[in-house]
Length: 257
Image (tube, rainbow, N blue to C red; front, side):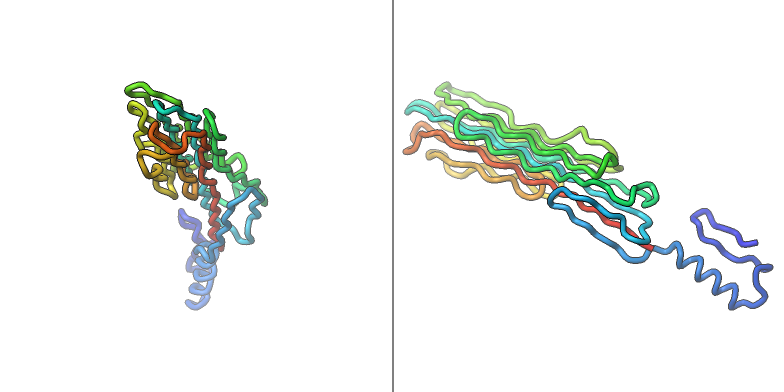
């Protein structure tokens, strides 16, 4: 009677065969059944359906939520400045599953980057949640706040929160928070970067300290957008929009027999 190891490898006993090569053949065939073979990688940059490959044994799923958009800025006067805040980075999660525990197909949702705040005093949108069925999810980053027309000595507003609160998996990383929007006596302080994600660093704040400056779109994948700004000495004091956050992504790696 053959025996089985704790990890599923079957091996022959002395009574199973009469010749040594038969023992070796049985051992090789049984080992071949449990040794990992080829790898299949399916990358989703838009929502779709995952189909389990033939011979699947283990499935590694990575989900990255979308980054938050940054806020817009209002028109200002010759005594005012404005600085919208950066969007938060999306959450990341990873899990490893026995292929037998998953269905033959699984619905995949890729969270979109949060929308840009429209020109004026408007907040940016939240990044979308990415998911692999109900098995594992990652929450998008929060949208950045609008800029405020301010002439006071110091005014600041918090950036969008990093994505958190998803479910499933065995590793999870919260997205980085978006940078603060601050003005000092009519001048913006450029700390309004977009929050980082697992796949991307922070999105830098806009350059320049005097004239109107738009932020930057969140880096792929999952980074928040940086905010816009303007100062009382600018030659263009009209309103301006924020920027969109970076989109999410789902990566499914299958180890086959």
